[in-house]
Image (cartoon, rainbow, N blue to C red; front, side, top):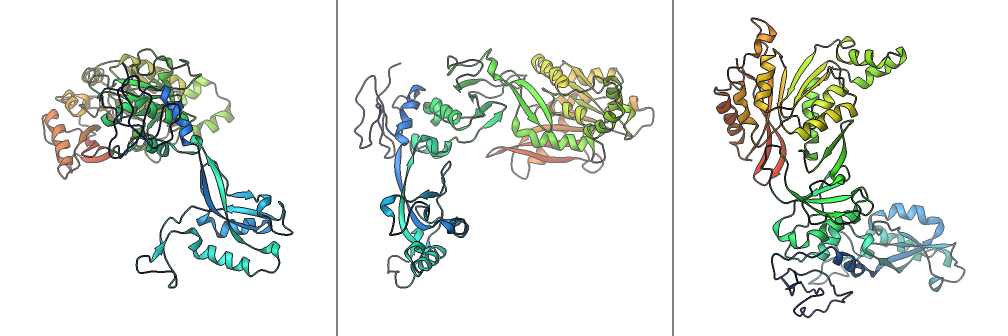
Length: 522
């Protein structure tokens, strides 16, 4: 595709090298055919290619002059504390510098004086003194108007001897692309018509995942490369290009940037939908556990880490002893690994055994910590996605989960509930983490006869935790409960069935993720 003639929008003046057409006139200094900000292309389908990113870097080079003061060297530490609120704060830059020889006064040298670089202006305007105020100007952001700084300067001017004189100066610094944050870089590259720059992202191991809005798509490779440059721990940047629509909860994505030296060296897959990309397999650490997964093939959302922790701690209970505490005593006794594993489930646990049915378990964010970190918990973990199931098994080994404590299945959610019922397996908690449709899966509990596993006359009921999406208005809780009631085929009594609705996270301006918890009605 030939590059279209760029257009200017909202006063943005910029040019890029064009294969056809003439670039608009610009007063910006051009380097290698590019200036800042980049304009909106006239062709809405056009995308700036990754190669232009390297041409833009030199456009960030500039010399900036800051106010400064020259001080006696022996007072450096004291004055840095006193004036910390007005000192220059720039990433990767100090605020204390040597004084050039041209600024020495008699009897001064490089050891006797230092220069403190100050902010270019105050963060907030302050009132001018009566003598300096005018009818049109009553405030100022001049850094030298700061009260503490004025006091320091007046004290220095009254000192005896040239060596003690504190005086105003300036200091010039060289700013490059490396000194700017992601947000600062993108605000200069993107046109002013794009108000919200995509400087944040969801991370999963060495992968950064972003959701770009339509107006940002012409700049997607530039955005991806900038995020990669500014985050050393990130090796690959992907963009979600569709919604979660399949039964495995995965979504289509494209690779925006890949670090050289990663598993797939170079950028041959950049701009393509990944299929078998080895560096999309990541390892995530959460709540003391490690999870290995392929980000393109299984469901994982790092924003749910607090929900994972909440339900794990709710199910485990405050009094339940963590495995790490038990292991200390077991090491002293030098037990075999097999006896340790057995003790992990039953022998050393004085608390009652808790059984969990993790119906849509994914790669194990609930079941793995429950069975690797805590005593006396048995999890039956299931997922329909065979790839998720394989990673679940791998993560169980990675976190040394006992086979008797974590039992894994690859089944449909409804079939899994029926399987446990037929096998007479009772569970105290059921987790249904499929926000788009989990409430509808509750129909699997219609006529559920799992109570027989507890014996005749048992009044104990399992607690069900159902994740779903809902609105942000006052009706959201009732609507979520109504969805559960419709699938169950019966009503829920908020008191008798201990019904609660917890807001898990903010999804969008009009949507929350919720967790409805209740005791399964008799």
